[in-house]
Image (cartoon, rainbow, N blue to C red; front, side, top):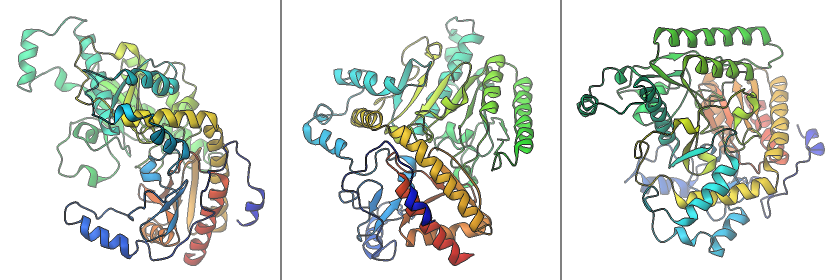
Length: 476
């Protein structure tokens, strides 16, 4: 692994100014100051999930500095939410220059009296990176809200079609207030086993990743089918992967045939994140898109995790080469606010059907405007593609060196993962990685996931893989 560091691939993005040379561990992780803060915090909020408490001002680039002075290489990025690393100079300069002052005095109800600057930002940030073919956008604050409004848009479109474009009758208007809509109550959204779409109640009905997310919460009786979850390396498992994709598509079509004109949408992650970094081929998604078209179901690409450049494209679905775009694309995380892009024919006929008080966050969209400028100027998507290739190649080398520890290296851009051979080893590995100075996370039951910033570079990959190899050698 050390030999690889002498020939790191070159990326177009400039180095992050002032970034630490490498990680540095001074105390146990979490350290005594983190644990003291956790004790204070836990008196008022549930703090059991906290890894460490961060020194927000000292963290820089790809390195999270905690309150005990440990400098950790961040592979997790606050669950995939950090696009430019910590304290990027362009973002700090924008704050100090007064560029965001218009958003500091109050938080508007954007559907009622938005500032003029909001329109500028919708054009310069959101529409500048909009998925091809989608001309409308609804902004919210989180990924779960984005999913909720995407499925609501699909329901509205199906109801409008079934009603023949006519207004709702007085009986329908009265029935909905009694929670009695015989036709509409049969509407469904099809999701995939292993998928994660959020923690609000509608999104939870679509989520199939871990029981702990759903236990004790009522759900809609909506169908789910197996997701392919292709095996890697792809060349070795080509026939097997094609067969499981075919079975998944057969299951989708069976549901569509079993519930004619009731499946309003099919929702799918381009790569299942929380469910274990599970992949399918572009051909699978093209076939899924065609089934949606043929049966009149909306095709929702849930890009809350995969959107924002991490796969080397602004949107992971761009690599599928679809003949027609998704009908709706959800986003959040690296884009700083939540939302859904829509085809124009998915806009409801009446106002207020897709609506809430805030409809997004002006400060976060102002930040996104800077993020898009920097990403385009510094060619961060090109850098992410190159860095991702180097990362996955390095993970495959780890597989070869430590076959009893690692398997199934895979990724698109730096949205990558590697499995542990025995799922029972995963908690111990994560603990050892953190003690060695890596901020890491898992997905599914056996995967170590990579969710770094767009400024993650080959040198950071080499440093991370050194730690992986050292810890694996201790355990193997």
